[in-house]
Length: 411
Image 1 (cartoon, rainbow, N blue to C red):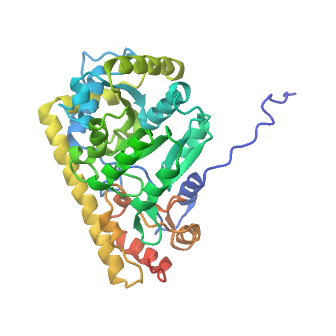
Image 2: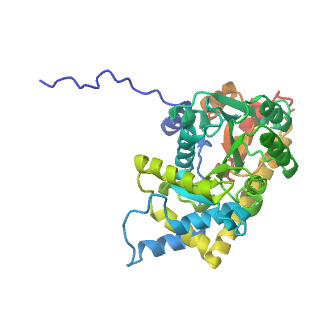
Image 3: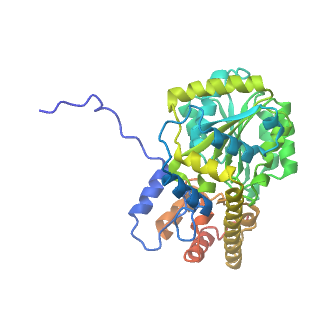
């Protein structure tokens, strides 16, 4: 007779709503079904987009007879760290020249964010209650990651104006004023989850307020170059904060821009006010890494390092990003025009005012459920749409269905 397992009373975990949506999509047998909740940048053929220089380097590495399979150092591939730091901050950034910027290679940007939060919960003594401010809507699961790390004091700031269907800079500033001094704020930049981009003037307002309240910025830099087509322009907010002498963290991701989704390539970028602080912070981060994953994945980091540190490949990669960004902009233009011609009461200008991989309409839960059940169009719970999932075969159907569920909306 088989004895009962000691884990017999462990309940089955409930699925997140977004996981359930994807499962429902896979079970759906309707030929019209479309899933627009991917986090992956898709090409026209519906497969993950991979820049040509990345394909070249990947093949070179796999066929390199001198390649070794030793573990990377705890902090990661040094050539990778140098390349991604210069990509984010600029090669001649004063923080790099003054040797007060560094990084830790991580398993993706989620790993970077979790590592940074765990470090701050242990060493950020300016705020004993460890209050963290995250954007609303939270399309990247910051709240779940914070709670998993034991953080319970979580505030939200608004980035979406539901009445205007666009940017909410005044609401955001109002919210920031109410947060405790010395809080930590999460700031998504470049390819943001809602497609919303603050301009330079608005970022300067944010910088001034955070400096007044001594709030610690934790940037999340995803898809650098896929918002404007220019890697330097997309990193401007981060560089501005560095120029204003903030201590800061930045979680970097290279999945969308290099097509390396299965390689988990990320970095926790650290900028401090002096080299002594950087040395101390890096040493403690490495201690945390030793207890978590010991050594990061090697192949993806080597691909990124090779592309970024080879001038010819680097330029070719940036040209690939520009072409990819242009494609996203064309899809946005077509989507807005099709919705405009359907003559709903709603303005669709935000589609082209937003940028990057995602667009956000602020659709209610009922409308998202209706799209799934009646139209076989599956979106995440927050209503975020992956623009790259649209193409000439499905864009008319998707826009018609969105028009139908928003027919009487006036914003």
